[in-house]
Structures are given as C-alpha cells and as structure tokens.
Length: 328
Image (cartoon, rainbow, N blue to C red; front, side):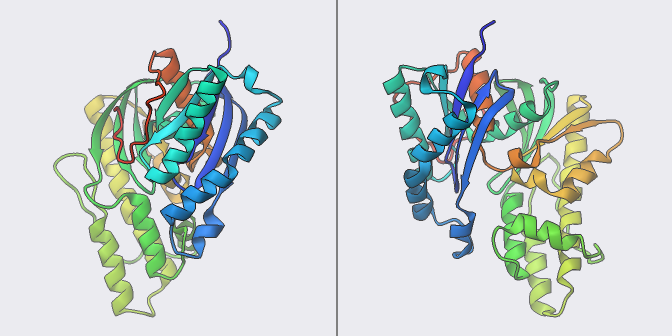
C-alpha cells in the first residue's frame, strides 16, 4: 500500500504550526511558532494580534517544515488544515493558505476539526492505539468526554456547562498572581504546596462538568485571605478539579464497558492529572507526548489522514467555523 504524506496546518489560536506526517502516525517534521511571549504582555490571547502574527510567519513555517522533512511540495499527497473551532481570524489564515496550496498544487484538501486533532495526537504517540476507546479532552476551550467509536465517528457523552478546565486554570493563575499562560504555572506552584484547603466539587446526574463554582471559591478565598498560602491553594484546586475529571471518566467507562481511555488537549500535559489517571486500577490510560498536548499541526495532519482515507474530503468552499462542534 502506498504511503500517504499529509501536510497539516494549525492556526486556531496563538500557535502557527505546519507538520508533515506519514500514514497518520509517523511525524517527519512538526514546526511550531508560538506567540506566547507576545500575548503574555496582555494577560491572554488578543485575537487581532494572533491573526496578524499567523499571516507574518505561515509561509516561513511551511518552508521550514518541508526543509526539515527533506521534501518538496511534490512529495505531499494531501493538504489538511484546522477549520474550527477557534478564533475566526486566526482560523481564516490557515484555511486560506491551505486552500491556496490545494489549488496551486492540485492536491486534495481536508478540513479538520481542532478537537478531533487533539484526539489524533494519541495515534502519533501510541502506534498501537485503535478505536473504540473513551477520550477526555481537556484544554483552554474544551472539556469533553467523548466515545471514540471509530477514526471518524464520535459521540459526546459529557461536557462543561460553563468554563472549560483550561480557562479555570488560567483564571486561578491570574487570581493568585501567576499570570499567563496559567496552566503550567499552577502545575509548577502546586508541586510545592499541600492540598489542604476544602474546595467545592460539582457533579450532575449525567457526565457534564462545571468549573465556575470552584473558580469562584478560589477567587473569594484569595480575596478574603490575602495572605493565604498560594501553593496550597493551587494544589487544592488541582486536586479538586482532577477528582471531578476522574469520577466522570470512571462512570463513562462503566457505561461504555471499556477499560481504555485517552487524555487529549493542552491540560492533559498537567503532571498531577496524568499521575492521577495513571493510578486508576484496571484501566489502560494513554496520553500524548508533552509537545503534542498543546496546539500543533502534527495532530491535524494525523486527523486529516484518517478523514482522507475515510472519504471526508473538502473542496475550495471550505470556510472557518469558530464554534464548530465535534463530529460535524
């Protein structure tokens, strides 16, 4: 069977990334241009600045990906790109660039759902992982429990009713004075503290999540007690949200009668969350390498490969859909 080489493009938020992946699993190159240093000055991502930065670097990032892979455009079989969800201006840069390449090179174009890309990051790290399995997607914009029925069939079992977990991490970081990006900084500080502060956990009859209550509790505690131990507060927050994630994941696995699950998304890089899932008895847990947890084009190329072999090919009318849902 002929190898299929996919060039993936990711520009949904503040990373401009281009990757070349063979057969959905083997990363040949994966270039990521991060804008974190730029947005740190503003305490979060500024959409207009993000879009402009994508325009400035996307051509150079693509050239670098080809150079590292020791390939030319002639070696590429498929062009794939993120078309949602994300910041509309940022998405449009990647979609427009991918459409231009597809047209100029006469190569198939495949649009990829960013969330499905995060799931596919596990296929790169774990060559043996195949559906069906449960996936917990935890990122700055999403908290989803998803039944992965096949490489292209997804069923949402539960999701957040308010803040995404990454959003909650960022807000807690801001409250205790850590700045942006919050997730890695909370994780680091929590390692020096003790989870000895009681915080609320929110559960529903179904598998949905809610993080607004615990976020507000942290804010109020910090406001009423300015001298509160920030490391203990971060450790307590991390423990509480992880318990919510673990509890719902175990319930979902029992519902599906499966014993393997994957973590995906930027928050899956959190060391406490990884360790907690690894310690659940009787299940096998997968998670991507750290550099594949955050936004990158390798995961988009991998998801693009599976879309392509399953006949999900786009045309030049492909457009950015900022609120795209999984499975659409």
